[in-house]
Length: 236
Image (cartoon, one colour):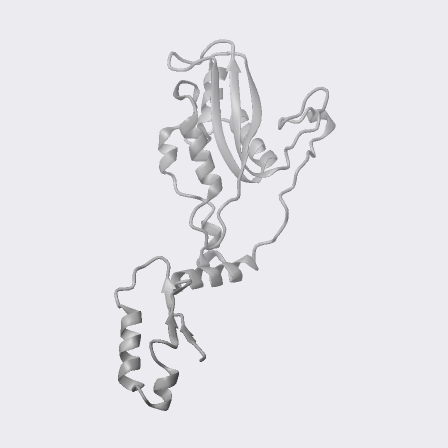
């Protein structure tokens, strides 16, 4: 005797209130009477019921949007290596006197800038202060932006790192900055729930020693800036 298997779709993120198995068998008993030809084919002994999970409508829409939007985003592997000119060697991102080339071309990283000064800039600060940031683009491009902020003073703009450097400059305090890559993460992509890059930065800021951190705790409340390019109004 051949069995018939019925697998109703089940959304794994919600609960089904209707007893589908009992309702199905009630309909079978009502419409496929015992002793009839169809009754011998369709009854409680020949019908097996099991649930199968499937994506809900929200997941279908997100998957479709991800497929459409991804066609407008160029796909390329994250570059590595160094393209610094000889006069700028050793590279700020891991370069040394023995191995001058670093990894300044890397993208999608959480980085740290450590500032060591001869004397503290203020009573609240120490000789060693650290700043944690992120960049989706090349690290060298973000580094150049930091250098610009530390060279040209712009009131009301810049970062807490550049403001600390200007505090030291105003008091003629010598300082040295070293840069390091803390973590590499994937940024937000269309249809994703979170941005791993932004989350990683927040985790490193929370783990940092408050007395030596230049980051503000209010940065924990900032929204992910990598989602904007995936909004439908920004897709060209």
